[in-house]
Length: 397
Image (cartoon, rainbow, N blue to C red):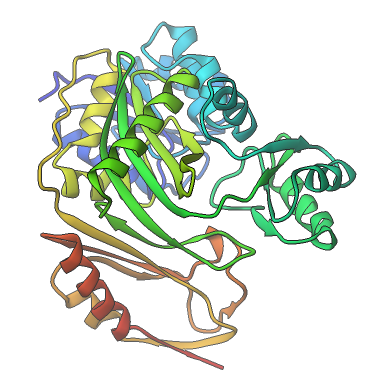
């Protein structure tokens, strides 16, 4: 148990709420900050503040007001640079400001990894449609066009020819806070995620998951399976590449979420983040699968305390299924409660209500629901997820 250390959680939405709640059970005194006055995590905080969590001065003011011992951003990129700057100003443990900036900027990551000799796609930045078109022509089709600093696959598209570059570039620039995009080589391969922590310069991988993505042009996760079913040699190669990527970007004493492609030329890094994965992965799924209390590890790192990371072997299994929209207006949903009653189903949620008009699946915000299933093995989790998904029916007009 912690000795009532006071911790400021920057971000208190659905992805952070389980961590704030769990911190109390561990003996911490959690405070929270979020821009949303109705943020669900506020319920479990000792006190909370409402404001812009991207503003380091706001974060610093909250930390001083609450006299906290540590500041953390759980499972969100948005607050990472502000937290690093606030910690640096207050003398609290944190990743460096430079590493924080790199961790939320895909272009800076590409530049760092390329300089370190890591396998990354060929890339070129752009700030206009004309520049994007020239870059695409130089790299050669197909290419991926994306913003350098957006999340949830917003503004990411696979482009097969010059005719589609202009629209894709406009979407990427609109989704970018910096109004900068990147055109990069499309690398064929299956995507995996690596989850872990870097502690005193050493990367500790605790789990690899495998993904299924949508068909082009939008490259969006539709299912994630834990743990991986890779060969020992491929698993070792992916972890080694992840460790080199972390070092090249200067990350230390923080959680790491990284995406890579299993390509014909070996593991290719897509991107990394100095935070745990969202969508309950960091707070709920990884502790179940690996036995590692991820929230406790991050809090200890934020307090400058020693940590012990020892994943269980063999790991347990888990699956996330994202429910995709279908054309038309939703009339009703059937079978949701039956799905929730199945053993191992942790969550079965539909986000939209009757009368909602569904569109195309282009980014994470277009998903209409999800399933999360736990089991003793990945095979069992996959089978139960299929049963649950088959029970859920959408009637559309």
